[in-house]
Amino acid sequence: MSHDLLLANIAKHIQLGEDEKQQFCAYLQVKKVKKKQHLLLEGDVNRFAMFVVSGCLRSYHLDANGFQYIQQFAPEGWWIGDMYSLITQEPGHLYIDALTDADLLLISKVNLEKLYKEIPKFNYYFRILAERSLVSFQERSMENLRLSAKERYGKFCLRYPTLTNILSQKQIAAYIGVTPEFLSKMLHA
Amino acid sequence: MSHDLLLANIAKHIQLGEDEKQQFCAYLQVKKVKKKQHLLLEGDVNRFAMFVVSGCLRSYHLDANGFQYIQQFAPEGWWIGDMYSLITQEPGHLYIDALTDADLLLISKVNLEKLYKEIPKFNYYFRILAERSLVSFQERSMENLRLSAKERYGKFCLRYPTLTNILSQKQIAAYIGVTPEFLSKMLHA
DNA sequence: CGATTTTCTTAACCTATGTTATTTTTTCTG
DNA sequence: CAGAAAAAATAACATAGGTTAAGAAAATCG
Image 1 (cartoon, rainbow over the protein chains, first blue to last red):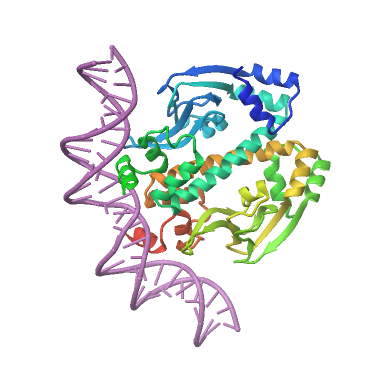
Image 2 (image 1 turned 120 degrees about the horizontal axis):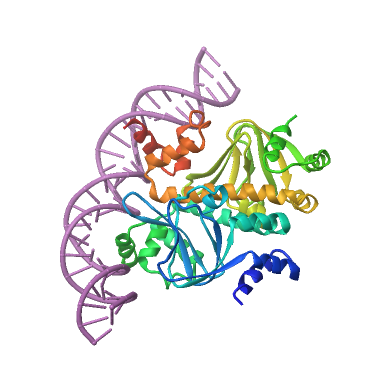
């Protein structure tokens, strides 16, 4: 069933008894979304951490000129959310939407807090995830300063090998922080 | 004594008994460093997470042309380390050095792992720190793409209000990702 | 399948930021 | 305190990447 991918992911880091798995799964909601459907808008409070069972989501900022800046893609097996809003339960600045039809598992902030209390091992699991994600964003923030657009394109291909051929150039441009016109020029030069 | 600042920081997130405080402090080492002294070089394995009791540290990358890109400043009350190397215990790419004379508390990776086992509450504490740091680097990686140098300068001033007047323009330039020449021009325009 | 929308390409011109070099000012160190 | 070293200022010129606009190709949808 749809929880298997997530349980397998968790099992890489912590060992859960059958009862604990049950308890954890009871806190999850299944959600199906269609391509282009939004899960979060700027100004919303993000009440759910989302795990992608199939399909692909993305989170992005919108600037004053309507340009999108993609913070993260979340293909199958990835977690996504507006971490700022999830932590503080204040309105966030991110949009999250589906790039393809997708199946998700959601856990609410409320249930997450219960989980931390009832099965403290989950503090360990989510600490490891947060640490890895931190490393990845630390790297990206430096890359965005010191690498040229062409080099950032190379890093994108390394980071999301499964997406390189699937995503439109427009999406990739919005991730590496250049205009679609410039990316097109760059790829043909 | 020098552990008070760290214990106060921890107390904001988790409650420790006297015995637990003792046990935790027993895992710490005190270290004094002089201005310009390095604590980590590229290629080193980072074996200690470092807490700044007084003074200011920084972590940075060096590119092929000898340019420094500052990942983080760590004034009093901040943790610093090469998270990638600390997690994986593989050689990292960061340099860490002291911008001023500084007093530090170090906890080794080995002791940290013991701590997680013996006082699981520390999983919670470091999860919260990792999450907050993650939010901060998520924001910065987007800022580095979508903001102009002048706007990034503004964000730097917000993020490190105590450092704005202390740091040389060269350090600030290496944080916001411009040349010192350009920062100088920008500040006088 | 055809119509509409979206994406991609190309090209001419523009701007923020980089480069190199020189001088001035500030900070460090013996 | 003096001399050396580092940082900051200034300026002329260079370039990566942005802007605007238009047409071609591809994807979407009724």
